[in-house]
Amino acid sequence: MFSNDTFDLKSLDDVFNRMLETIMSSKDDIFIISEQSRRSFEDMQQELEIVRKQISTVIDEGDALEKSTQLAKQRLVLVSKAFDNYTEEQVRDAYETAHDFQLKLSVIKTQEKQLRDKRDDLERRLRGLLDTIERADHIVNQVNVILNYLTSDLKNVGLALEQAKMKQDFGIRIIAAQEEERKRLSREIHDGPAQMMANVLMRTDLIERTYREKGIEYALAEIADLKKTVRNALSEVRRIIYDLRPMALDDLGIVPTLKKYLSTVTEYNPGVEIHFQSRSTEQRIPSNYEVSIFRLVQECVTNAMKHGKCKDIWVKIEWLNNAVNVVVKDDGVGFDQKVVKDHSFGILGMRERIEILNGTISIESEINRGTTVLFKIPLEVE
Figure (cartoon, rainbow, N blue to C red):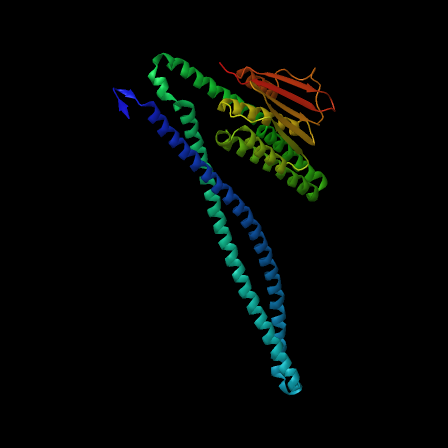
């Protein structure tokens, strides 16, 4: 691997890339295990609730049978003491009735024990699944830290070592990339989970007041609605943590990755239809271009659904000889561009990405007439 005290950069890069591929593959496997465990946990919780209701029903039936059995036994005792006062058929009927109730009571007790054993087993398995989910999430977070360190700090480090003059520039670029990523994450957390959790806090106060003023039914309705907000916040946090970079970009390219992303968005947002079109022959372009285009479309689609309250979104990519045009249009409520804040996180982030690529951005919007965003990105990079 080494020759004349210098690094064999190709071998070093090969080893490094194989290591990254292995770690990323393991991360995907862990995430799949975590999601499967979550689904199993939810299914098992539902099953446990059913079993608990069955136990309650069986207990009620057992109590009723207990009373009936006691009454039947008392009648049998009376019949036995005054045997001569009853016919043979009445004696037989008293005996069979008492025996029948006793048999049913035995069966219901056995059923209750089986249900209790099943409940205890489900509770043990739920605790085990919860532990598995927590461990998997912890491992995924650790792997994310490792991947961030490897991809941000060590990628192409061999080339930097070969030319000492480039070391300072290399370090500055790493720091700039890290800070840029931190700013992006800060914006996403600010506009997503942070806003949702603030809403949760306000809603909890509202629930307390609703309970005092309107009663338990209205409070329960508020709690059910609050659960939806919490689930959305949890889903957003998972997306930010796990999907820092769409893996499919490297393997499939921007068009298949966007198709999959937009399809997933449509699936999880009923009532919103997204129309995607790619014109001319698709090209594989540098990775940083593909990531930027993906993020720009992602930001536009998110804004259209979250702020635009749209029903239809059109995403079109046009491949030219020396440039790529991207149009994202929606039929939402739009906004007045004269009063929009210059430092709006979403628009600011898009402009920053476009500037890095030496491209241009155009935004057209009017109240109640939707929004259209056009990016033009040159592909001839010096």
